[in-house]
Amino acid sequence: MLKRLRDVMAGPGSAQERLEQVVTVIAADMVAEVCSVYIRRAGELLELFATEGLNPEAVHRTRLRIGEGLVGDIAAHARPLALADAQAHPQFAYRPETGEEVYASLMGV
Image (tube, rainbow, N blue to C red; front, side, top):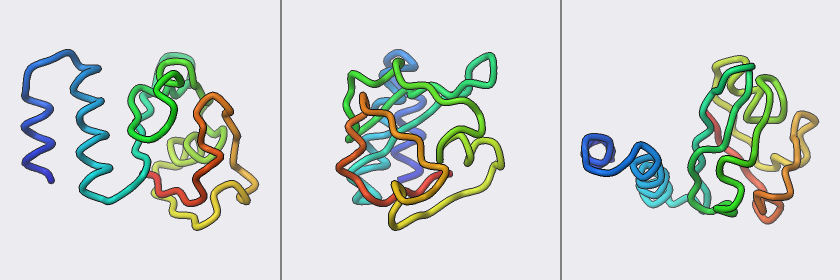
C-alpha cells in the first residue's frame, strides 16, 4: 500500500485529485467502507477534503473545530481512536450532510 500511496502522491493531477485517490487506495487496502481526510485550516478548523464512502457533496462543506466531535478530538490530542459504536460516544458530533449515520464503527488517526 505504501508504494501505491507514494505513486499517487508523486503522480499527475491536482492536490485534490491525489487526495481523492489516496482515500480510495486506503479504503480498498483496509477493506473499509469509508476513508476520509480532514485538513487543518486557519482558525483551528478541520475541513473534510476527501472521502471514499461518505457523501461527496460534504467535501469542503463539512467542518469541525479542533476538539469537536471524534475527528476534532483525535486532532486535539494527536492520538488514534478506535470505536465499535462511534455514535454512542459522548464526543460524537453528527453531520447530516456526510451520510455517516449508516456507519457504526470508527478508526481515526
